[in-house]
Image (cartoon, rainbow, N blue to C red; front, side):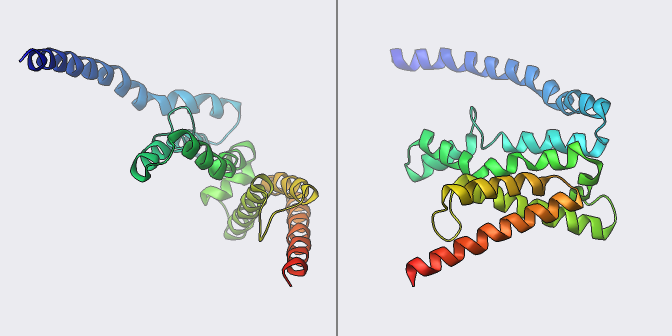
Length: 193
């Protein structure tokens, strides 16, 4: 009976605390996008890019520490270690953290947001996709098998070049990643064959 009475007294306090937190958080969440995107626009980013930058990182907050709600939920469902699951998921999502800088830092990067001529949209989107693949290969250290240190470094440099929406850097980055991939497949093919 004593436990029941304590439980009854705690619940109204918890509900009051949650109501107070909701009253504080809701306006911040509603105004946060405007507050955070305004400095990006003042620095020279296009308004759609600035708002998408804020939205993109708000979505990625589900995966990244310190909150990492999605990996913690996945660990609870599967019975895994939540901290290990968080760090592994963060490793897999690391290339995604670079993408917003493509459309924020350079006006040509707006093509990723489907703003611009069709050819430019295809060019920038393809180079960004190759850049993400090169960054994932360089950070993860794996394409068809384990990458050597030299292949990883070249893949990372190629990724950086692919993320710059300039035709020359895109071609050099794509060639570098193509060479790494070709050499890697040949080396792995010889080892397995």
